[in-house]
Image 1 (cartoon, one colour):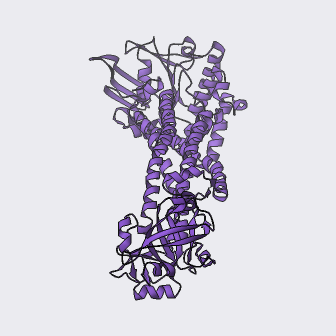
Image 2 (image 1 turned 180 degrees about the vertical axis):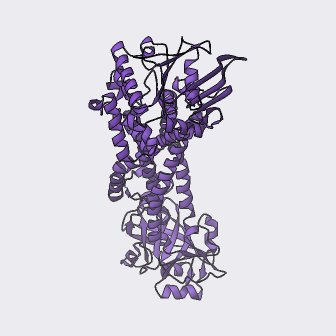
Length: 393
Length: 232
């Protein structure tokens, strides 16, 4: 307790030197938490949006289905297993059929994916009910995302020709009418995707009752086991890409943290080295007054470490209101963020967990203790008589 | 000399100088009794400070035996030496060596913190020590705000506050003017007489020598003269 009291007195009496170190450390502390919170918020937001719009509570995939290999799509369809049929009938799942196709907007040809979905489904928050809108006889109602509308230059109520190949390999064509255009952050349900009524698509391609994947309701318990034709894909699988992107972005940002922390820790290290150089006489005096070298080392280490502790407290004073404000108001994301590998909403809400606070606090404090201790090892070689004369041993 | 609180026999101290060494003390034999007001006098480089440092367990002898208050200083480890200094010895330095970030009260209180005295004990002892040296009005001042004489009085209060058996003073008046030197020395004489604290000086200042009751003259690392001075 004595040594703690002395160390606290020393650093508070040291004035500006202490507070500069404390400020830069606290700045690093708050900034690390802030950026980590942004990534956490980003990850959660993307996952939440994907759950709501695309992934639901998990999916069953037809065994041939590979979204990254368009050549699998022709064979990626099958009738549902009895368990999956049961889930769909009970409103706990909805099925989607995928068919590669081409559209001919303004005389151009453009490859698209036709996705058949039940217009009355409530499993994902796609505007599928728009598919019940009245259209001209023989025309297929279709819903597309804003990116698709932009790339194909399609507007609401516009009609475009679509061509596909049915289950027998025979090409057929019809006209679709855009009955709604929706906005979403999730590109995979938007870019090159055309949503049509499921039953109509099944008729078009002669695949009655068949689907490519089944989306489960969120929070569904008792998920049935997979079958040879239908493979269960859990969140770990479905969000692997997103998690990897966020992981790589975190790793990238860690360079920034390392530089920032290095600057802050260098300030502490420098102060310690300078203190040990300038305060040799004081060390000699402390030893003459009865302090052991170990006590002196502990005192100087504690002085440095207390700067870390003060930085955490100071950081908390201005950091907590700042971070709380950010959590509430969020951060407006520029359109350019779309280039970053995944899309975010117009506003990103950071998420700050207790674990994040705890780990960052521990990381900062331990780092400060280490850099505070390293220069003090010189004291262990210091002779009291040399120290009293202001000499280093 | 059976009751001597400092007993030195055959003390030799060498300092390495490249491949050779410099012999600062060459076989010192000395006894100091409780309550003495003694000075190690002599010119610069005669070994006064070296001897004082060894008695104060701040340095180790190369050869010989040094017993201070029953402790064999030459056999003490760092921890034991620190304990001896903490509990029994007070130091007064030429450059005062006050802790700059502490005020007068905190500087004087410092040795008591190391002794883990209670707050009440500390307060009582610090006030008494500051009254001895007449610095009650400067209690909140920092060393930078004090004159040299005042700083040295704080140093005396700090040395005396724990009521040590021995006070070791290395050139305590070297940085002071005559008036301050006499004031300081009178304070030390008073403490010596009232508390029976043993004072051992390293000095070549005539003003200090004039107050000594025993002057041990060192020359080239040896005791050239050991003289008891009769005072009136």
